Length: 260
Image 1 (cartoon, rainbow, N blue to C red):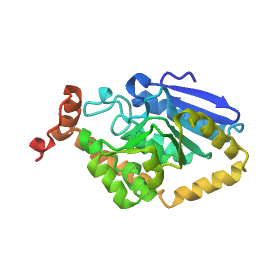
Image 2 (spheres, helix red, strand yellow):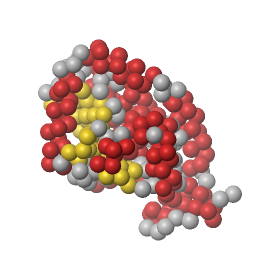
Image 3 (cartoon, helix red, strand yellow):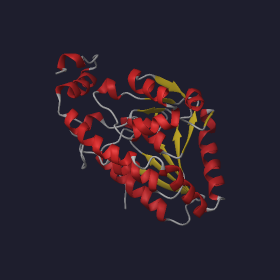
Image 4 (spheres, rainbow, N blue to C red):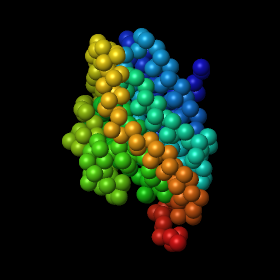
């Protein structure tokens, strides 16, 4: 399959899957999600691949979540909210090989969720993590909240969602959101080294370990699926639309005037 929104490259047994929308800060639209799902399946079936890297093109961003220019109450693809985001998260969790998030810049909103769902996260000292949903008229009612609480602890997860602050790579490591933070110029080298080291391990043992790690949060897929229906209803409200309008108009949103 030829890809438009992503790049797929094999590097010595490591599959690099890169969101290639730097002009959009690697924000994903419906097509991006579809291509990522296909690429993850391709890497999962390839017996020459031992590890997978999820990356974002350019210097500024790993991923900044859903493309707001493709969102006006509904995104531009299929699925409950116009994005098959639950399928993308499932693909990251179900592919029987470790997935490393390579975070060189902003991992914001849905991008932060992708980094959370990946098995490992290696970031640059220029990385910035954070959530923006409540500032934008959105929320992730699945892995972005419940799994995040397991990864960083419930109090810190609530802080990230309620206050929508940004966190450096070093802070991400301290809270358990990232494994290691390295100098920016060393990021690709370290990511590839980790990937190649994983390739030396038993693929069957790794696949079993990954499934075991995911087992105690498997129920969150059901919560996420049900939560998307609530999110669809929320996107149809003036309160949610206020977030998108404020972003386009470059002003501070006033959500409370729409509260019913």
